[in-house]
Length: 240
Ligand SMILES: *Cc1c(COP(=O)(O)O)cnc(C)c1O
Image 1: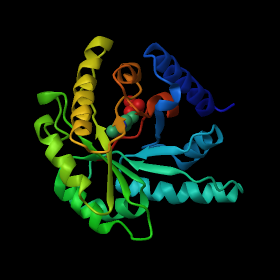
Image 2: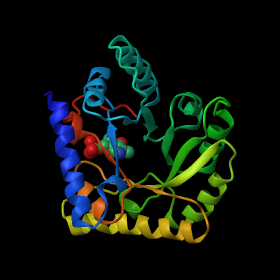
Image 3: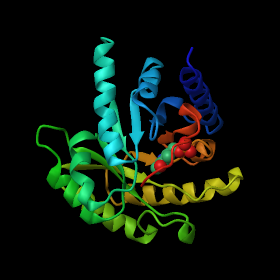
Image 4: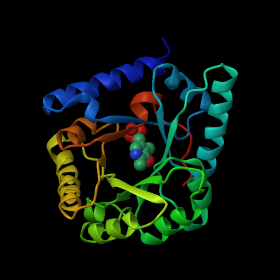
């Protein structure tokens, strides 16, 4: 068994335990494996362990890896269909390759980015699945729209023809204590319920990373984004 295979089993066990503790069915939480800075071979190792959804943060790296992984799987004679999620911050001049290569985008924080992604989504592909990122940590974080802007932004995004709004995403400022970790996740869940009350058909709460997945699941995460706990620490310098 490769280390990545064992790590994936351990993460799935953590997720199952957190779901059970929260009285939730484990299959109500999706696992996104975050492979940023890691080679295509590591993704293939995770595929061998049954993982099919992967997250990338950088446009060039992500698009290249999608092609490399497909080539490696084809060469193995195992052409598994994977689902690629773009989870990093997105500049407006880099939306086109994302609209063309990814199935999901998690960090929409302004309408301009959403409009460009909708305009650039190829007609032959299904609508791009998107989440709006909300800054639920106040001053401690710079990414995401303000909580009071979230409903209006979500309504505008939901109206775009080539996007399908799935829900909300957040990256809270890191803290160690589980009770403290839960507060921003609870804020995101409350906003999510407001979207549902406003009639938006959202089903995805993208929250929780390697260090806080238990807190996120306790507060209702439906998709957790896990990198380090699956692929090990990232040593390469991260270029935004
Ligand atoms: C890197 C990253 C993750 C994964 O973080 P880990 O702590 O390695 O699990 C999740 N979400 C986003 C947006 C990231 O940039």
